[in-house]
Image (cartoon, rainbow, N blue to C red; front, side, top):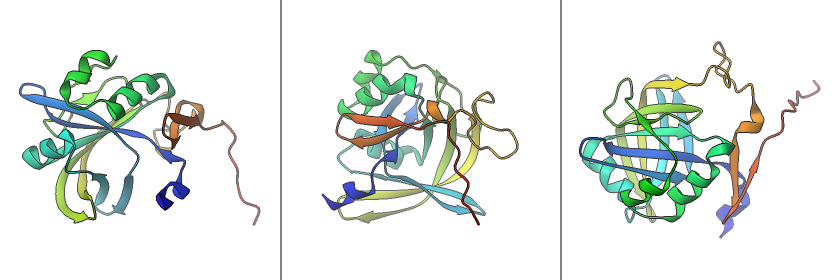
Length: 175
């Protein structure tokens, strides 16, 4: 699987659905920024996933940025299927600002997206979401640049059940 040569990749939780009806959380590594005007973020999801069905149905999703303290929840969300797994996870939901899909209270940040495009590539659908709102932990992110201040809280997926986190070291290129 040559795509593994791109790892480690940041790991996210994708929230879909509605609290009053049906909600799900899945782990996703295949998330990327596509544009900054407007802010567009894409996520690749297999049509086999319950999250895919909910994004198709409601046309929105939330990208939650988990911390290292949420690693157990990341693992459960990535290895179990369907909404029953939520009873095993230590997360709580909160109302999002601009979409009806809930955000995760324990996440370092939540990025609210409305689907503006989708396309199938191989065995995945790539959902493009326009960012309509967000929340973030002001102790973790700089309020002006939105840059992380506490890098060691963030996790990246290495392979299978292996994850890593970042050091606090900032490297600036010599020019």
